[in-house]
Length: 68
Figure (cartoon, helix red, strand yellow):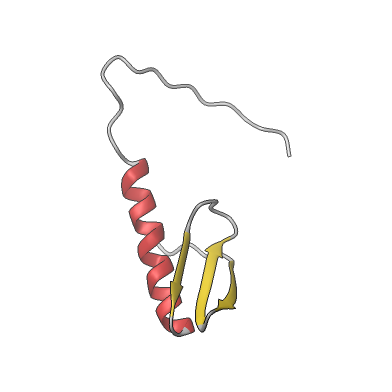
């Protein structure tokens, strides 16, 4: 499944630096825009692996909504 995100990017000391606007904390960089795309995709996948960790023994969960 392919998800579409918005990448906000800028140049910093010759590097393209970017972040996913929809996912706080997913940042990366690259020497080219194509490399930035590859690297930010990797950063997103790594974030998903971290989120997918099994729950701690005895931990409970709940769902709730946040008004925007």
